[in-house]
Amino acid sequence: MLLLSFSSMLVFILLHFTNTHATIWDVKACYPQVNRTSVYIIFNKGQKKAIAASKDPRCFETTFKLGIAEKPRYIQLPHPMVYEAFVQNHYLQEMYVAKCQANCSTAHPELKKWVHWNMAVIHSKLYDNYDESFEIKPYGKNFIKFRANSKTTNVSFFLPMEMNTKSRIELLTTKKFWLDKTIKLKNMETSKIYSCSYLLKQSNPYHECSLRNDLEWKIELSSLSKLIKNIEEIKIFVGVTGSGTNSSQSLTFKKLAYLPTFSAFTNIGKIGIGEAEIYFKDSSKSFDISKIVLTKILTEEEYGCVSIHKTIPAKYSCKLQKSKNWLLKVISPEEHERNFDVEIIQDTLSSFMRNLQWNYVFPYGNTYIKYFNLKTYEKNEIMKLKFHFLDKFLRINEISLISNYSEYKFKTNVERKFQNYLVTEYTRITKEKILGNETNLSIKIDIIYSKTKAVKITCQHIKPVKSTKSIKLIKLMKSIKLIKLMKSIKIMKSMKPCPKRISGVPCKILTQFMTNKLD
Image (cartoon, rainbow, N blue to C red; front, side, top):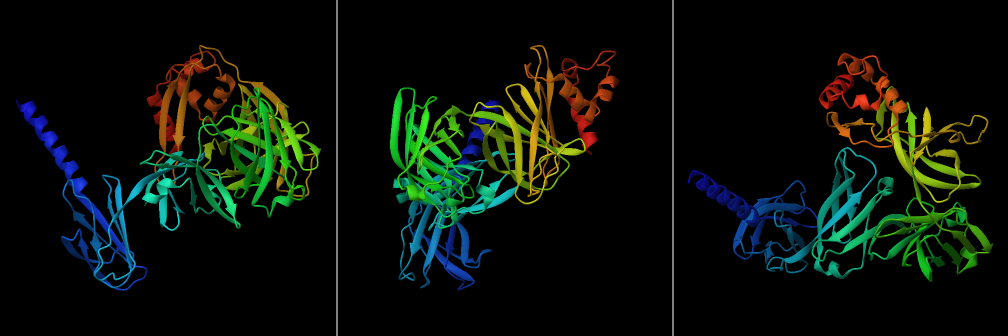
């Protein structure tokens, strides 16, 4: 009986909590300019309240309580100046907006419901708390907060009902901060998803977000030519063959912001490993193409090429290859931010990965370490890497590329001198196989740093994997003096350390040890 009574009370409390939040509405009314220190608001023709100005002297904020089934309908500010009013319930994720543009002393403008949207931003860097803004004209500016140690950030906002019919939406976003971000908009009412590209229009960067179906592909054409500097949009004929299919059509390519690359979207079906053909309709506007990349919207699978043949003026062709992913490992004593491009040289072919940033790095002994994602589109061996530093030189202790259980080490080519000291070439010297067997075990230690928060250390046992590198792991152990620790808990005894024995170290001990070392 007592348990039943407690359950009933809990249900009552939850219902009361829900009903309370569902009936509280935040009201914000703004004038185009500062004109008074207080204002009188009439809400739904029944409730009245006098309020003072908020932090923004042009705006006035308060709350009203409505019945469970009651919705905002009318608002009035008995003052002759034009105004805009926003009424929002955060619990219900609903917003209503009214604008008064004439006879505002007596008018009762109707509150119209706006639609809930979500913007998801996927990024490769782990940011500390960081605020940025975006704007959808003429509906005002929104702010998005990037949380520390998160690679996906979401923000909710509202747009008028008529935006439901739009197939294209422009986001005003500035700065290179947005360059490497993947942005998607979702209409929470219709569930439609918009994919965004960072473009240039009249030399101003912005995100163009469009409805895309799962069968579409994104085509990107990169160039090293200076002729593209003043081109923002160009029509190009594109033909793609592969897996028994042929597709050819005229497309409008738009220049990406801050990059020497043009982008367009099209339906070309299944590509497989086929060929791409690029033909400029107007040969006077043609430019040399250094890289072609095709990405499927649904699966994000990529095909591309850098071995491009120029058959006749303004016509290019190449054989498409499935992309190959690499991890670029860089170790440096430098702790300050640096920006650079990496040129990947495969025999006589070269391609660029642009706008890489040396920031948010992790301590590695007395130096720092960071990994970057690179892609190649040719089968030729990578023999050289060329770093093009954009502002200041980065001192580098060690560079290697990792892919398919192999690590390729590079050294500075001291014999190769460039007039520009901001360009450094590295030549491949060794290729090491990452060997192991099914019985090897290891421990994963994650150390997460934040400028505003304390260090967070997590430790977990990893299941057996083939890619465990005994020699590398022992080297890492020495760098953090784990061998001494393991001797003290009688794990190593008289035998050489190996990953299997490392798994015997309790995570609790490792975490405490690392915490003391970091302190």
